[in-house]
Structures are given as C-alpha cells and as structure tokens.
Image (cartoon, rainbow, N blue to C red; front, top):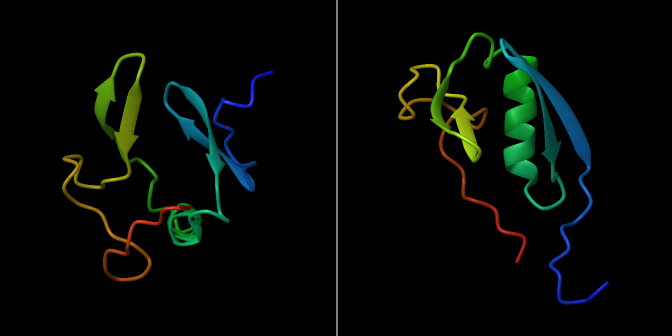
Length: 89
C-alpha cells in the first residue's frame, strides 16, 4: 500500500448511541481531543442527550444533534463555557 495515504490515529474509545432509527457507532479520539471527548462522555452519562433530536440531516453525508433546543444554536459544556477547539497538529 502506498505511504501517501493519510492514516488516522487509532481510536481510544467507542460509544454506541441508540436512536429511534437504529444504533450509531461513535469513535472517540481522546488522546487528540481530550476535552471534547470528556465533555461528550460526561454529558451522555448525565442523560443530556436523551430525547434530543437531530436538527441537521444531509442525506449520505451528516447528521448533527446534541442541541436540546433543536435549532443548532443551543447547548452547553461540562466546563460551563465554550472551550478551545483542539487540533492534534
């Protein structure tokens, strides 16, 4: 195999999200973005995502959720404020 292909790092954890239309496997890169992973996991444990809708759907591409207002404008973090986006590079 060619070495020009970009290789993603191995994931450190997986989560299965149960939805009304089936399960979604989510892979977490905790080493590369520890705050985002901790935030997601803690909110999930606390039931934050229970009954939250997917507010953005693009067929064969993306679904987006996690906003309890259902608009894409709301939401909160366990840190009490937005946190800096983490880039591995």
